[in-house]
Image 1: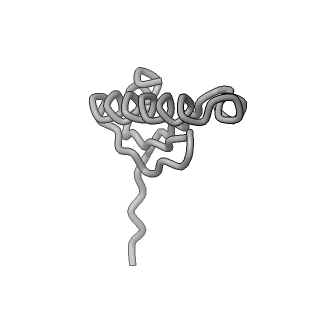
Image 2 (image 1 turned 90 degrees about the vertical axis):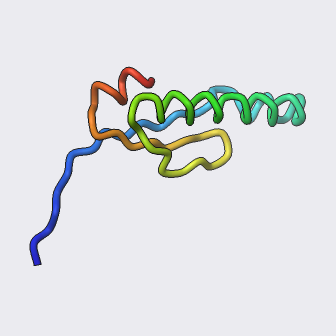
Length: 73
């Protein structure tokens, strides 16, 4: 069986200070998280990426091009 190989660029986005913000004002922190996750997803898709996983305030995206991953970042 032949193994298929492919190149991929991985981008991980995380909200700086999210935990502290959630301790101060959880409702506001959740709204910010939703807003940022929507932006990350939209920008990733525009650049040809795909969201592999979103967990809490972090998102993992895969791109077939490092240029597109950096442009998204």
